[in-house]
Amino acid sequence: MDKLLHTFLTTAAPSGYEEALQSKFKESIADYVDDIEMDAIGNAIAAKRGPEGSPKVMLSAHCDEIGFLVSNIDDNGFLYVQEIGGIDTDLLPGRKVDIHTEKGTIPGIIGKKAIHLTRGEEKKKLEVSDIWIDIAANSKEEAEKVVQIGDHITYAKDAVFYDNGLVASPSTDNRIGVWVLVETAKLLSDKALNCSVYFVSSCQEELGARGAKTAADAIHPDFGIAIDVTHATDYPTADTKLTGNIKLGKGPVITMGPNINTTVGRQLKAAAQGLSVQYEAVARPTGTDANVIQLSSCGVKTGLVSIPCRYMHTPYEMVSIQDAQQAAHLLGQFILHNFTL
Image 1 (cartoon, rainbow, N blue to C red):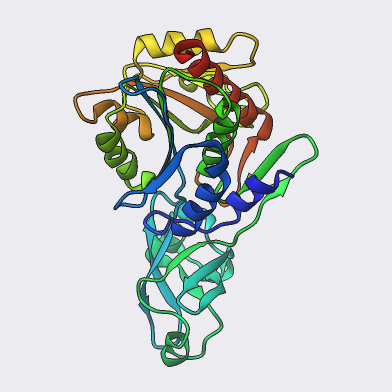
Image 2: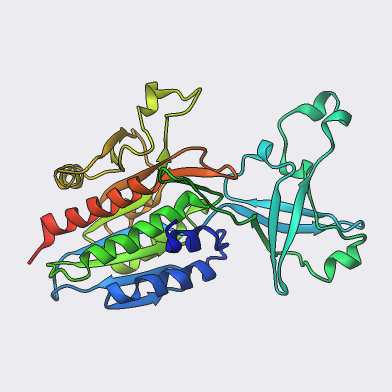
């Protein structure tokens, strides 16, 4: 078990509530960069400074996760919620969640009508309005002693580390990418570079990559590479015709397509010599920080390096730590091949 990755995976940080995770990111990367700052929206930006006037390279991994927001408390003390990000509602019943309140974190159970009592139209796909959260309160007044409207909720924090190097957690998307940022900073910490590297732990990606946009507008990078997860296709029922063959443990994924600058794509391929890598084609804007980085300022030469992930946006997302380690080496070699003094 990697202790830093475990810390990242078990820290609650849904979109808009990333402060605790950003604090841990800043602490973990501080020894490998020259300075760190927080911007107004909540991005943590750590910089390794190169010579004045040298190119700027932005590496961005979003730190936020999907979650919920308390929107109502009924007379019997049950909580009703809104979704933060894309939630697969069919997987919610019976899940344990953490409600993060001003008085601390309290446990809750997601409830719905039992299958024995469900009839006809009620068996349709669940809407978030069909479920509630039970905190064992007996009344609205009792519930309001500990929970308020607007408190945020995450799946109960957990991380399962397997002996073969796989790890599963509710927030693997994209804490594994933030971990890659730190590992890349370690690899470059003692290198003399002809560029400035900005390691951005971005916020609110699950709501439209909002943090990466503001960070890129402020940094004005010459090159930007997003680090995120992508869909693995090595599980039963996976359709590889469009998404390709992406497997856990076979290396990080280099994306090709209109969201990716062709020069950066070639440079990433060249930097992958000696590493295990995989490739995917995406013929549209990617649903990652790469999309908004490319469109920021007057346009940025952009790339995307991804970690294969099974079961994205479910209560347990699975990745390979080896793939993440290879991603850090790929990014390090990309910088060293192109920007060494």
